[in-house]
Length: 540
Image (spheres, rainbow, N blue to C red):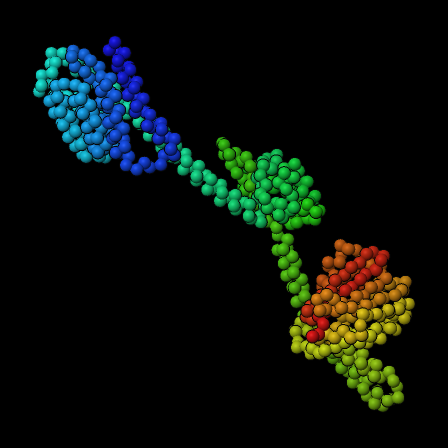
């Protein structure tokens, strides 16, 4: 029966110790205000039931109340310990006799336990529990021999001390298990929060960067596409997962892409490369990619992280710089050529003026002199390519400038069986311009139109007002046309569709119109002719 009483008491003791710990685990581990007070009161109430279940032997009873007092002192300190001990003493006095040993033993135990708590404050609670239990043995033996309590039956006292020791051990194990579990849960929650914060940060970067981020394995399977693919390429992530990556890379770049990927898996080194990626609407976009191998178990490359950036604008800027460099070279060349041309022009002009003075009846002298002046102004424009000069901007009527240009080109048009058709949606289109420069633009455009019409035909010139306070000059020919893919290159230096052309004519036209805050656009189809539209701002 005694063994059964032991088991029942220890079981109930374990239950009362573990119950608040289990309940505590369900309230998010928030700090409990006045924890020592509430824990002391709870433990004190528990001692009431422990004393009620005390084991009777030889007219004496013993229980686990001091096992609970020791644990409360070790884990919560003297305040909670004294509260628990007070409940234990009052309950003992209420239900038992022989008060002096109980009171004296209680006072000694409280003093010793408090002293151990203060002097052993750096020790862990489990070590404090061991020291307090050993000290309790001394206090208990002092009480036994001082009051001569069953000194002839040491087995009784041994059983009691073992009983208390088991209570302290079981209670300590339960509390330590809870504390360890509590720490694990706290660390896990902290790790989860850190992981969520890190994941949120990287998701914020990945979802809001314009760079394309993808993760690829050795078989070229993509396990991750950043949302920027939809913004830059127009594809949804689900669409990309079902498409082989090489199907979206330009056929000329596929071999280079595969070889680079294989090289990274073999050499474990990161590489950069440029390739063209297909947009959802069919056009090609140039990307610069940085590929970094990601190592897995056994130091083996399992994935590649590919970060790609759209460099289309950078390519355009490089082409612009290249074209600017060409323009600079052309400007220097044109300036030198123009300088050499002006010398013989001055001589010819001087002799024509002398000839006019001696033969004033000949009417072609004025026409020759005006053409020489125009040639001289053109050479001045060539000089301006190399060294910009101040231009004289005046108010002029575009229709009049076009009419004077058509007059100059009429002989060539007549010889080519070409007829000019000039129309306008008004009579006056005033612009602020340098007249000779604008005439040169019309001259170059119309001359190109004439040369494209080998079988003759009509060239339609139309003037109309635009929607933004501008005038639009349209020149439509009936020539052999220009392939659409070549239109963007018109105006580049040294690029010409003519067999002996230099491309300088349209280049100068673009430069002049740009200086006048205007623009030139082209529309053309092979064998259907070419439409040139020049937009110039109207004068206020």
